[in-house]
Length: 221
Image 1 (cartoon, one colour):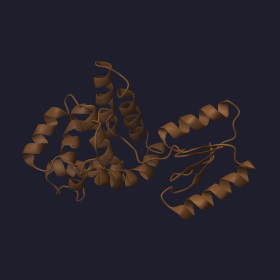
Image 2: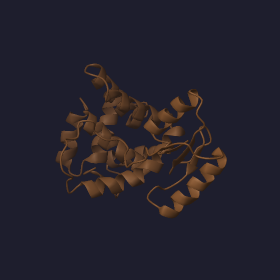
Image 3: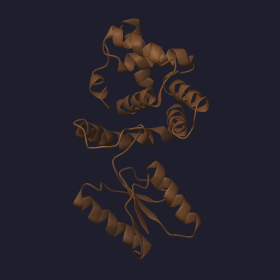
Image 4: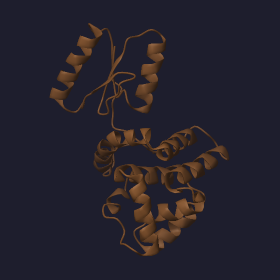
């Protein structure tokens, strides 16, 4: 059995569930792994798909079932309105393509991993449990041991472009929403180095340095 998108949240869960039921599974994903076995594959590239499928089938000794689970994703609001695609969809798709490989950073960063896990848990909870999970996600991502207030200040510096925007965001991060935490997590992931980002944000707040380039282009995500 082959499953695409096997390193993502749902892909991993499907793979593990199938293996527990006795299935022999090889995954395909942009992010390879050893346990369970996930081979490197870009499903948007025909040559990559052909090569990865051949290697997977060789490992399996044949193919009985293919699960096409891969898709563009990442932290995204569960309350996004249905309807026709918007002008932001191509931008969001390009961000998601950049984002997917960076999710692996959470494997070696317990703070980032905890923030992502808590944000995901908040999707399936009601208040007051949702609100608490979101505050904890904010603290895990940007608190650095200084608490949620400091995390909110850093998040405001990360997402806000003007002094007024940052001031408004500081207030909003006192009671963070799913979408607000999602935007923060996307920005942290795309930066690629949370420790360095924390230092940059503190320098920005202290006026030591200008805001890091490239953050503005993430605001629409």
